[in-house]
Every structure is written in structure tokens, then in C-alpha cells.
Length: 117
Length: 118
Image (tube, rainbow over all chains, first blue to last red; front, top):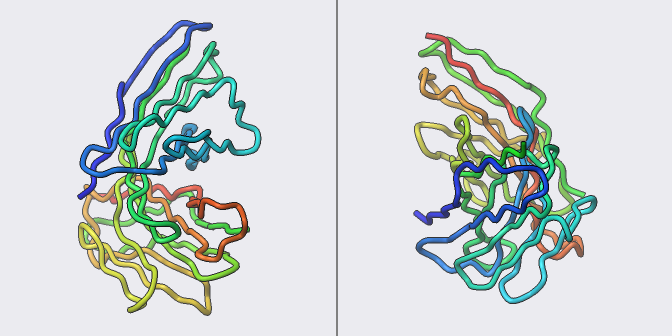
């Protein structure tokens, strides 16, 4: 099946620093990738939809200047948390879409645990 | 707007007994329905999906789900639970009718924690 990887799996950083998370589709090309945030014992909250070669579409309430998304190739999307604060600590999950809209399937990465001290 | 409801935060079942995890949905058009499982500190793993065809869908690890259009439900079932089935289960829906939002987004339920007791 289609595989999506995320790197790093776990990161601890100091408040005020920036952290980059990579999401890769390993065996397929993904025009569209999605970034989710998951709080403890909560569902996944869609942060943004990332389209290759164009600007990401952010969900209401998500600061685009704080959560920078770059989808520079058909197999790689990155999420950069800028000037991280403790409240940004969370589990971040990406997914990549395989197939044409609206019947595409989403394959999820293993997630990245971010802890901001 | 599309939505998913998982009415149970937690389901407890004895090993070997049948299990059901409930899901109901709301969409404007036709639904594309999914079940995912999440183990601690892991991403989501796909279990099964329904888009059209037979209302009973069989998926990974012996799980199945039944699409019921009149009740707008898509409950997840397994005839005999295993301790290793203990995890967090998410139901998700995509509305196949374009609402104008553009991306045919996947909407998740809040999740149901399944505990299988030995």
C-alpha cells in the first residue's frame, strides 16, 4: 500500500525557536497533502491543505504566519512551526492524497510529537 | 456542512465477544465513509471504506462495517474481539457533493477508545 513518512517522529525545542516537520509520500506522487493537529484524547483537527506548487489553504483560526507550509514537490510537504510556544505542543499528523478528487484516498503519516519547553 | 458523530467515548468488551463501535454521519450529497485505527503515539491506519456497492464492507484485521443509508450510520463491527484490538477508532466522512469549499475534506469523529478485556 501507499506509504507516508514523517520526520522527525519526536522533537523537543525551546520556546521561541522554529521547528520543521517533513511529510513524504514514499511510493506515490501527491498533489495534495493535509496537515492535522491532534490534542490529547481528541480528534484530528485539519490545519491546512497543501497543494503542490501553490499556496496552502488554511482552516479558520489557524495562523498561516505561524504554521508555514511548503509543498515544493509531489512527494514532499513541510510544516514549519515558527517561534514555537508551549501551547504549540501537540501531535502533528500529515496525510497525502492518492487519486483524483473527490474519490481520492488519504494515507496518513505516523505523526510527529512536538514538545515546546 | 458534513459531520460525524461517534456517540461513545469508550467501549469495553471482553476478549472473544463481538464488538460494535458506532458512527453516524451527515452530508449533503453521497458519503464516502472511512474507519481508521490509531495506536498510542502513532498515525492513523486505514481499516476500511465505503463509497458504493455492497452495504457490508470488509476490511483489515477482521473488521467490517455496515452502511445504512436510512439511519445514516456506518457502525464498525468485529465478530470476536482481541486484546490487540484495543486502540482509538475514528470514523470519517467525505461529502461527494462539492459544497464549494473545494477540497472535499475528510471530517473525523471525535474517536472512540476501545478496550478489550482479557
